[in-house]
Length: 378
Picture 1 (cartoon, rainbow, N blue to C red):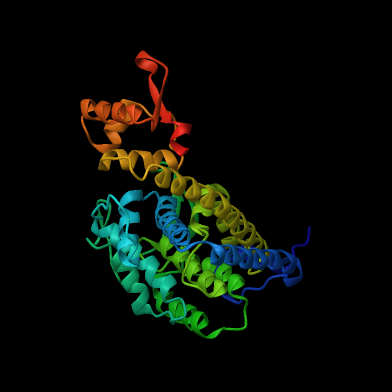
Picture 2: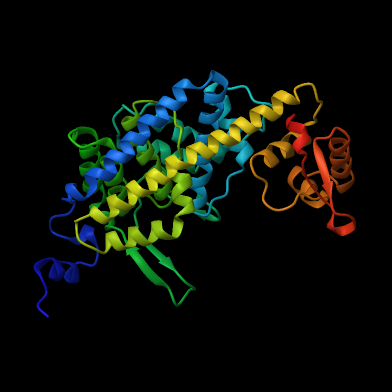
């Protein structure tokens, strides 16, 4: 079979950044027009819904969405952030009053600061200094886990994405060499700040694949990529308020996400398939807004009905988790582990809520578990 010129290029250059015309991406606009129109219509519909909400409900939606964005973006990279710490950090910075505030750790504050800087100042230009500040906020100790890394500086070594056990590693992707990084970042930042003719949603998809391909830092590249994406989506919405979480949807579609990234980085500079996937993922993210709103309405109703009921901090935390959709059955052991209280204290907390008709006991003996009492909403 005779290979076309594009096949010969791909064979000679394993990754898109090795091609002579990198980064001259192109795509089939006709294939994307309908889908982009549907996404833009859905964005407008969500913004209309939010403007019709009461202040408290809209504020809670923003808080919930941002908390999801920060926690799920980190989770994609295998970094688990405490949900309550993230929520507390965001609430403090937005001036939102919440009960049971938990002092966040430095790296949690850093992740929140990076996100808020990007979306609250979405119209401000990008610079290497700003990117370095974000990177420094993500790694305040200068370490990623047990390893010391370069922080707020471009990496000075090779970067590969690998899997499988040592000795049997499979290389999924290799980023541009260190010698190219400065020029690559200059080109990316110039495009980011100056190319205004593209729809910001398309530009979000393009920036995502471009930045993650460069992979300029020792660690945290994925999280910064998704913050850059959110920055463009904020430009598309023309608001610093977030009502849907792209990162939360990517986390749900994590396997497909890595699959399309690898396929795109090993393909041609025609990124139609990548943008198609990005738009589908974004649409699914906006679908989740209705679920978030339903959960917030349920939470708001519960606390309104039970405004005169006395809860201690542990009880409030666990009831909130049940309202958010607690995974599995609630037991004394789980209560004890989550609240870091003794089992005796956990049992007293639970029994108190059963007496107040907040919790309902199910089963007996070792099978005893608890759920929210439907009557607690009336």
